Image (cartoon, rainbow, N blue to C red; front, side, top):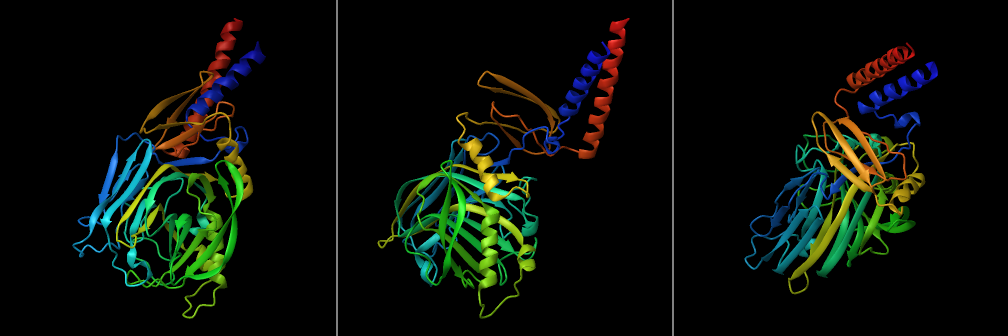
Length: 430
């Protein structure tokens, strides 16, 4: 009877500890999984968030969840009365639809991008020309953050190019690094912009220097592959004013018109650092590994750049079905990280995502294929996404309100449960 009582006490104490929401995955009890920061579709329900841009509104910031959307027609020549058309970005729970439709369009640039009108973007973090973010990021990836402090960050996108009639275009990431933290605004000499072109139509940017090729691992439609990238660099961007920052572009040698793609952000930052350190600068800003590692990652954007055709017309339609960050421990190497992610992405069991927002104790009941029901009580202060497979041990993590306080509450709860169970056992014996 005493053995049974001890067993009951341990079980009750453990349940009370787990109900407080402490993450015990680090103890090796539970199998660790990536922390998923879901961006598109938004982690909270929305009917629709639409942003329309054109000659009368070159910027139109709208927010949903952790991101902002914006047509960002920064190079559109609004003074040209011939400009006719619009850019529409419509975000729903099915994804983001982007349409650019112009019968005539013109850019303001005096150099190679004079036909280019803008970058239709989904942004995360603090845009470099703003002193504060449009919307607060997740605490699991708080931008701006120093490069040296960036967690092991994988980026997942799933997109489709539906129709295009353009002069040239790209679907790409735009990553902004600055030497100074907020509230400093703008990009200047010594700052770095990194683009990763997944899909593109020629020509390549004029004025850029080709400095070689690199290969990186990636998950493409669930399969681990090695992708090749041509690396271009513009040592000093002269437009828009004041300019002076360095622009590095990784261009896929085999453009990907759609599908599911997972990249490792840290890999591209390491490659960019290596390239910058290898350049023989004519007007050399001070560079070292320490300087690069101390730079601030301000913002990560994903979107489409477009330029007009010879007649001045332009049409592009594409869909972003899914966009998320997957955060893993820094001691997990890239290959292992991809294999962990692939084990979920290629599983025959469909992952189920549960999202709740709460400011007090909330019970989340998760039913999976009518086989497993999991209940977790959480005290959370932000939107948190849990991805669960019924064949896996479930790890529930969250940023709890007052971690230390929660720990002591858990400890007291466990001890109380233990004592109550012992008292109950003694009464049974009597």
